[in-house]
Length: 229
Ligand SMILES: [Mg+2]
Image (cartoon, rainbow, N blue to C red; front, top):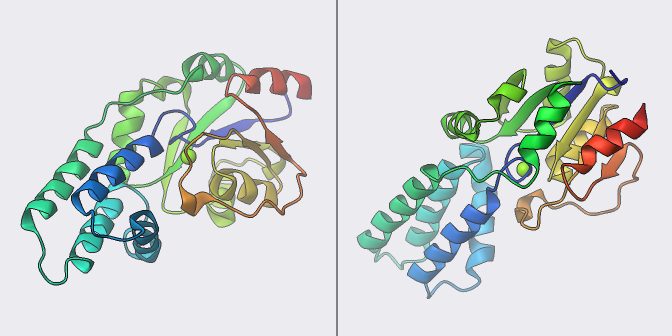
């Protein structure tokens, strides 16, 4: 056992594909609304405004798309489009889980040496469904589904489990949610970029790199951990 006792994993775009489905849904929305100028920007803006009401996840995203559709319809809302947007959302919620490469082998290996947990944000029901359907549950001690992944959230999880921040490592594809808050409370943030990451998760790259590690793939974690002992 190394000095790192607890390893937290982000789920979406760290263990399985997620953002790609939002991207595809957004493309379908744009096809239905060719008259909206800068649609990506418009949608992002509405989503950002709505996080404080709905939190993260597909339901909030779909409500934001509905809002965009209504807001840009000049009071002539197309009910067929509304119906199609609702269908886009239900299809997203029914999407099968697509694990990212080398995830299962890596978790299997690490679970023999470390205590692993999932820390994810989003809709409670949808995140539970994905965790269960992923087949990965057996590698994790428990799952935390939270509203926001900030310093306070991480501190509360560690306190509950009697883990000192220095013994905690968090793995994820978001610098903003997975890496920086954990580093800031005294843990280590392992950043594994995914080619698609939501614009809302982007941060200025002006932070110092102390206790931040960037790995190309999840399987590189095994080697990195071995070298820490
Ligand atoms: Mg993620």
